[in-house]
Image (cartoon, each protein chain N blue to C red):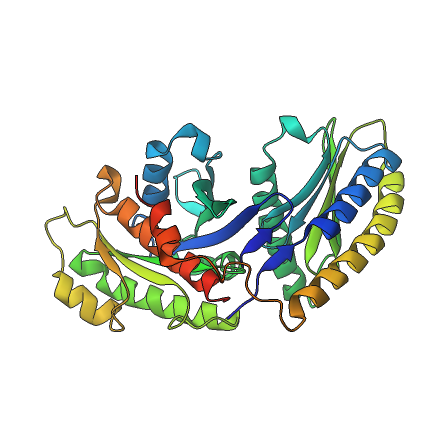
Length: 195
Length: 159
């Protein structure tokens, strides 16, 4: 849920990276953090287990510049991908303005992708959002791995509505900023429409 | 779809005034006000040394998690929380069901005093947020971004 502050001339929006466990949500944020000018970012927070698995969320505040004198700030969050953290995932979706679904392109993770996208739909609906209407982009991650599904196959299974989609290799940054820009644009366009 | 929070100059001044007064009256180090979704609304006191953006996000995460726990045991929410540290302590209180008032204090204050002052400030803040909600719901309160163009959005991303 965006926060427009006329007093400080700021607009804040919340973007959530969703997807199955180990699909690369945290890696997306880490890459954005590493490649962003220090003036434009805040501290990245990761609430993770001892084995570096996301326990609650990662958080990265980002400034994108000004629109008509308003500073635009995006708060990027990831959810914990592991199935049993569902209660936490629901909490993080509260007040979301845009969603990135990070899919794991490996064939053996296809079922996990499908389960996660369905879980996203259900959890969004519980908060009163409709996945078909919210600013939403899909990222096919891990395109550098050998045992991956074709983009056509991934699209058929995970993106039947044809929302903006990007191929990515998150550790090296391929597709990471394209994905972020796409969802940020959709969020701002939605705000313009008065969403 | 969902209408976000909009803060206007006039209400912001009222809110900042209430937070400043609470900082003084409660002998607090810092007072800050956070939207339940993790957006920082206002801060007062010695906040310049703190990473208030992270504080706001973690406060919201904490309140959301405690809210989830409350529902599991059949409570609506836990409207007040207190975390005691060795030197500094933290008091969180949900105001008007929508925002969280956070007070950080040390041995110069006490939990009793903070609780007392937070209660009064919370009531005042709740009234301001009611006014804000009415303003936003009023007919003719168009999106402040209705006039931005696709070019404005594109320009943001052209480096």
